[in-house]
Amino acid sequence: MEISKYAAWMRKCAEAARTTDPKLTKAQRRKFTNEIQSEYRGLAALLDRVDNLRASSTPGAASTLDKQELMNGICAVFGVKAPQVEYTDADLQLMLKRRFASEGMTFGFALEAMKIGCKVARKSWAGFGNVYLWLLPESTIKREWVKDKMLAECFVADELVCHGAIRMKTANCKVLTGWVPDGDELLAEDWVIV
Image: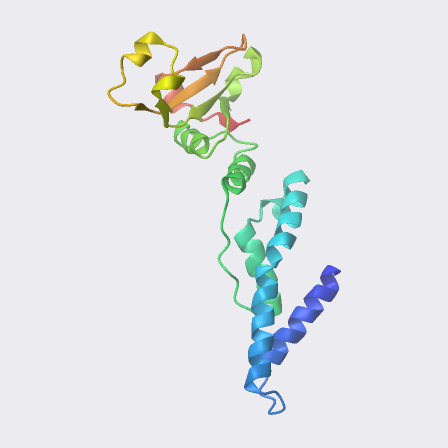
């Protein structure tokens, strides 16, 4: 259905649901209300399409709207209460990337970005090739998976919990596990999401 027709249909339903016309029975009003609620919950597909357009657009007011603001605006037009939008990690990554696209962020924000699955780097690392950091989350490994003898000695039971760590992809395309920032990197404000 074209969006303009969709909007007109929802507006008509919203008006019908709120009307005090005695010709409408309670059951008819309830039916209209249920249809509206079902339809505005179905706006998720529309939001996803709009979100894809926002992701491909150049930075600007329209591209920085988040899903909840967009849902609130759409539902306000129809005169219905907006449902609470659930944000995925991908939504949060996109919002952070847009927020800090032109300016850098602190290491604290970079760490939060890594926690939701983003890769981060400092702008000053640009001359070193494709160098970036990401978070290796905590995981549980089984004894039979382990080939490292030193690691095998750590097992007390059949499973072992391995703490998370920051990993770095280095300029020579190797991976460093357990990267730790120095004072300069902790205080830097040129961290970006890559």
